[in-house]
Amino acid sequence: MTGVFGVSGAGKTTILKCIAGLRKDVTGHIHFNGETWLDSSARVFTQPEQRRIGYVPQNGLLFPNKNVRQNLMVAGHRRQSDKTSTSLKSVCDLLQLGALLDRPIHRLSGGERQRVALGRAIFSDPQLLLLDEPLAALDLKLKRQILPFLQRVRAELNIPMVMISHYPAEIQALCDEALVTERGR
Image (cartoon, rainbow, N blue to C red):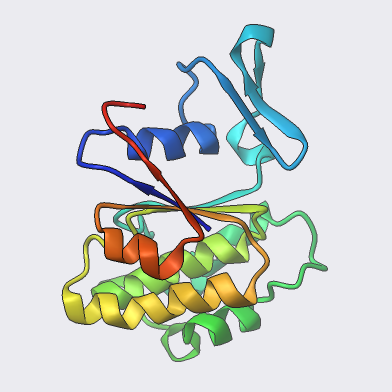
């Protein structure tokens, strides 16, 4: 797990959006797992849906008109195969979502919403997981509740992860290495 740390406006979210393929107006190179996702000089750009990335934005972006199960199932169409190790049950067990499956989104706490957003990203069977300040919108009590779930995901799943945070303690608790950004560099 790699952490990306820096002050607001330093370019952290832009880095994630570039990796995810959500920014086409960039120059440079992005290579992952033997694949070239971006090579602006050779005019190579791999579409976001072909990169198999699980992306958890700052606010989770859950569908308010769907319940928890339906939000998780949205990721099902992105899966490469039905024979993956990340079944709905395994995701629910890992993140303790089983009791929430039929609950509407508006009845979830902030921590529950973050767990559902993380679960949806994992259920898509990603080869890379991008976490854009997954703890930023949570108070200290909820951060303490969510941190163990992130540690479990890191320990139990073999998915490389990149996590953005403003807080060095979060980076230290979760990440193997850190990148520090300043003014887009």
